[in-house]
Length: 204
Image (cartoon, rainbow, N blue to C red; front, side, top):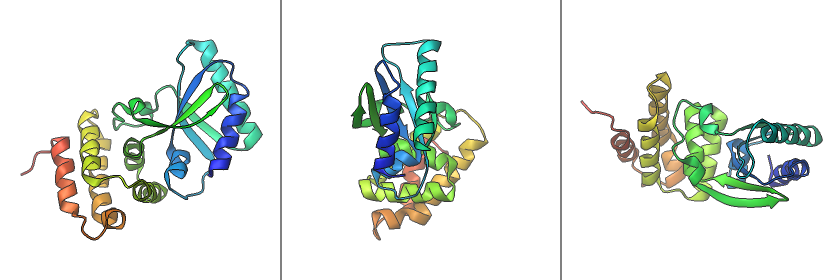
């Protein structure tokens, strides 16, 4: 996924939209704009309808996304609330975005890297790890605030097997990839301890 492909998709999307829409871009497409170089041919995003509501407005968004996918060959996955895609809480992700571009009536924003990373850590496949390391390094995201945020996300999540998996994946990420991102002085046990405190994980 490249910036040119992303712009092409949203230009095609915007041609079919007749009312203001805000898009919050996440997934591999957002990762590509934030510093990852992994190839992908889909866009994942939340849709915010500020002035229109109801089934007719949502039908129009669906039609616009389908048409843009046909025009560009780029698949679209979208929802009013992307936090429903995960059992791990995305917290108040919609309040943590940055401007990217405007295409007609469509404003496209990117999730801030720390919030974008929650979804990647919740899934934690090899491509997600590559995205995480590329973006966190490129964006120079500080490790300690990141650990606190991910701990808060775990604490806010409803109990499920996904919580244990998320905990192990954060621990593994700091231990295995932390120094590649933050340098030789990075202290994985300290980052994990900060994450545990924020998540309120009891220690024996």
